[in-house]
Image (cartoon, rainbow, N blue to C red; front, side, top):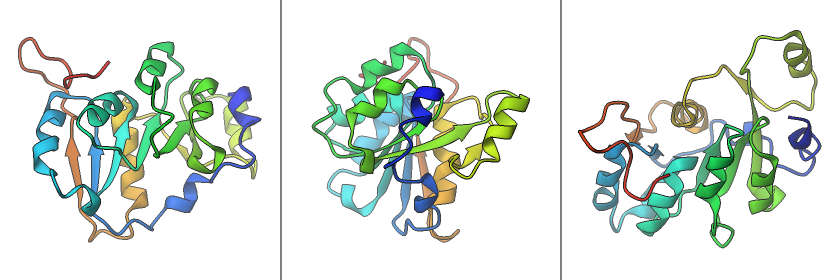
Length: 183
């Protein structure tokens, strides 16, 4: 939290994305249904604004789909594997203040936005959120994919902009837990 707080200066407030996206939005988690996305948008990639959970990044890139934005929420070191070799791609990183600080170094500050996850009910966090410099806050949703969906709802210009969901399946076929190439 403190390492990311000191990096806030120069980043783009996540609120700058609220109510501006006019293209249909695709939200990508790393569940098994992500594998059906690739042929569904083949040759139509630019028609969509694509948001991805961190664990969906590798499968998307393996299928030549660079998302517009990637959400990362947790401070688990295993998540950093999703970003290995990704510095050459141009996507916006939306990171929780409690995510690994090293992940902020994979992109320039103008391609980075922070948000606050209210991961615990504490006096310290509640008081901190009252400060002007704190980014937009959301309740913990239990999944970075659901956080991605939450912000997709905030990013779209209005309710006429459709949101399509791939890979947010929480039940699996026998032998499959995630999309191919995911962590």
